[in-house]
Image 1 (spheres, rainbow, N blue to C red):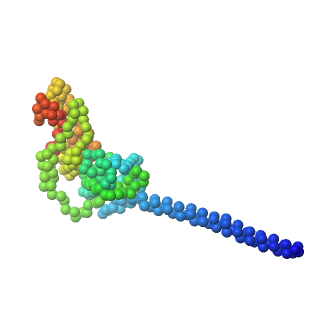
Image 2: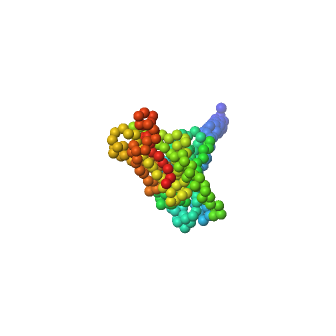
Length: 303
């Protein structure tokens, strides 16, 4: 073969090899780049799905931010610290309410149907709403401006084990009719007619409430929210085991324990009065174990 033919053959082989290498390596690079782009877009979409805004929107106020209050699953407590933008929103709301002291805002808390409610409230959503209300009050907002509600739904947006902003704020319009005073009279009669009674083991106390007792706590909190001059009366009692003076002290400790329990569930400490009757007002026979158990109690009513 001539030298010229060999030269042309070498050129042809070089072109073929170069084309093969280009298709193999450069196209693979393009494919990988496309894959990475797809993965990045997927992450962004997931973040958007978890986005729940913090919104305060009423006549004279419109505040929105990407930050929000958060709650651990099965828990009513607000995760601290709150997002800076939420703190700014609360300060804006505080200023708005100072200018509009009659404004009513309903805080609706949400919980999912698979969450466990260990609070004194009838559902975890209501407990969360009251926690938010208490947090607002701790920041200088007036409790009288807020009502609370709770709702149970099938699902809520979450990040891992954290619920993102399961709370809504509904501003009452200026022309919303006021609730009849008769409703609060009826509610007070209901509370006092079937008073909340918490029982205690000997020298012990317990926070385990039945569904009926949780509803009574919720009714008391609701009444106190709306009737601003009302006072809760908590009276502690004991059985007759031991001397009277010691039992009076024990009855007071039970009353104080119950007061602290009510405070944790949204009732202002300054509006709760405690007393102790010791062994002086038994409702059961102190000669039986059952009677003594019935006497170890606190009775909670509205004055």
